[in-house]
Length: 599
Image (cartoon, rainbow, N blue to C red; front, side, top):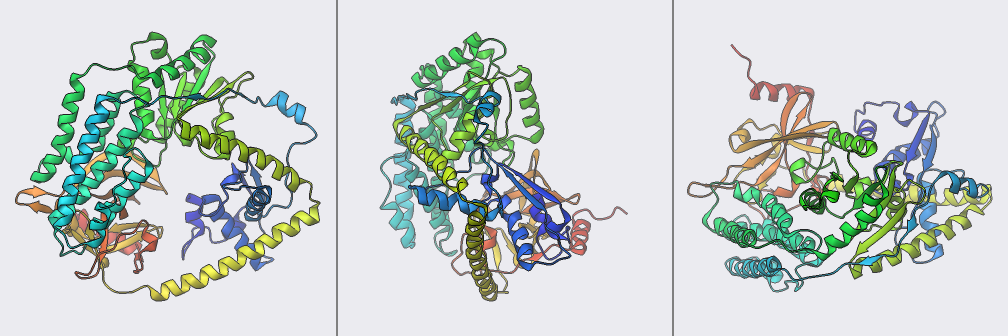
């Protein structure tokens, strides 16, 4: 993304564009599909190629991958089309796969044995029943608040609540409910809408707990809920009803704390697998356990560190998660990632519990087992995760519930389909292959032309009118559009000095994204009742060129003109109102307002 930032915009830092480079090497080049950073770089490459300017030589393109993928292809023709699309995006002249030296490849690169998958068990815990009771009570209260409003969408959603609270459909429903309440008319019952939004958030948290409770210890699930709901618990000035919602969680916590810990049979299956392939293999063995969520990664590390079994504790398990989210949401800093990888390499850490961020790029020779703990991706990640087992005689195993086992079966079919499609493509002669790439690029250029015309039309439709950014929970704290700017044409920030009097800044561990340092969170101080404050997170505090700015988080705000129906957006780029780029002069003026010169 850093390179893309320097290639785009009205005044890009790399004025020569891609011609500033002589070669691009894309590792894991299967990530050159629509919307991915590699493809964004190739967009500028192909645009320059299309211009055919002699004074702008193009860099050589090299793409490397162990598994190119076929996405959701169901037959060989669809698989071929999918692979050729990646070749077209990368402007491939020659597709090279190992054919003549397969024996040498097998001698050089170990391929792990895939063990038969094991099915996990589902059990009903007391905590599960309690959570289901709380969910039912919260749904009842949401229906009551919906009756107090005039919003048809909110009322409709409360009439169509999914029955299974563990199913992803329920989480999607909770998100829709919150969105509908956010988009309600600013004049509609603010208290009721705020309560519905907060209830929706609680329901999401309990959904995640129900989704994880069969895979971890109950007290680790409670630890997650404590962190998830801390934004409400930390608000000492929360409204009376909000206090009732939080008290439901505290009552649940009290009940669970009084119970004796129950053995989770799925953790016992995981423990037996780790003992067989890591503990008993000696000091040189290593293992990676892949999980779907950061929540589960934290839970498994907690369990392995405190289970009372010395052989498992000695594995010194550590988590390995993304740097794109802050630590209080389960992320890691780059420094922590490097430290953990070094410890894994030396053997100080023998087990990593990782999310999908570790599926590609890790190369630890001693790693002899990969365990997929109720988590799979697509046919690409199937190959990539297996590839983390780097020793000869290494193994890969899936421990999962029946629905995941069925998805893995489909991944196996698509992986085989991918091999056959690659073989058929590699049989094309050079002219035939290049002709297919050119045909794809012609279609691609036509789609770009159409997209550019649509973008021009969108810009014509963009209204250069004043709007305001409004806190979606209290609907009181606002920022006028005249005080909103962009950084890198992406991050929306406030240059409103008065806003600083309406927020509370909480410092966090520093983390980086897009060359910006994220150093804190901003909490809304809007008044919801007498002497009660909102507490909504309005965004992150970043440092740009050494100065702090508040980024306006699109998830926690709505956009409104006067008192019209506000709108929510998933991305700032979908907001059809002009926002100017922050100039150096504005930056200095804002810095002077925030940090006035000392007399």
